[in-house]
Image (cartoon, rainbow, N blue to C red; front, side, top):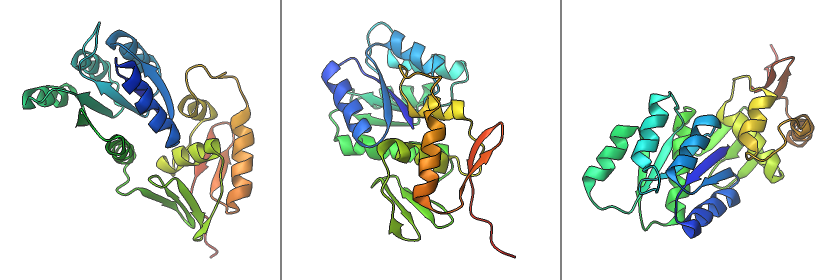
Amino acid sequence: MRLLVVEDDPDLNRQIAAALSDAGYVVDKAFDGEEGHFLGDTEPYDAVILDLGLPVLDGVSVLEKWRRAGRKMPVLILTARDRWSDKVQGFDAGADDYVAKPFHMEEVLARVRALLRRASGHATSELSCGPLSLDTKGARVTVNGMPVKLTSLEFRLLAYLMHHRGQVVSRTELVEHLYDQDFDRDSNTIEVFVGRLRKKLGVDVLHTVRGMGYTLTEPQKDA
């Protein structure tokens, strides 16, 4: 899952990005509203953490521009302001949730997980597909209750497919959502990681749809 952090405080921006990266997300960073708006308008993020008090272009204006342009990614706003009217303004502009500064990083992580779950129609932190389970909070994967050890990229790949279970996801979409903006988009590594993931899971849930991409579905039951 690929996230964008738009925060003008360099230290806080890097702290949030580091925490998200440690939790298994791919993170791009912007330090003012203009840069943040451009990235959110041109890159396919799964969620955005957006500060309201930004230079050049304030966070509410950034969010309003995204929503008017049809950008539907979940947005978590950050605000140091205590006035309830600022939070209302953020929600009216299209925010999905907010965290007031100062905050605990675990709260940000929990709210991001919740936004991603809701965006893909899931109610809990544990996603499942037949015998396969993925815990987004603990970053654990099990098959028939037995733990499966994955690399960070394999986990991100599986998590994205689990959030979009039953849908066909193209290789291009996977590359866009699993790597940051500087990654070589012509890479064929997704196919390699899909093959490795199939071997590690050992169950028939990850399928190739020829000419279209990949899909995660429950194993077919014998008649």
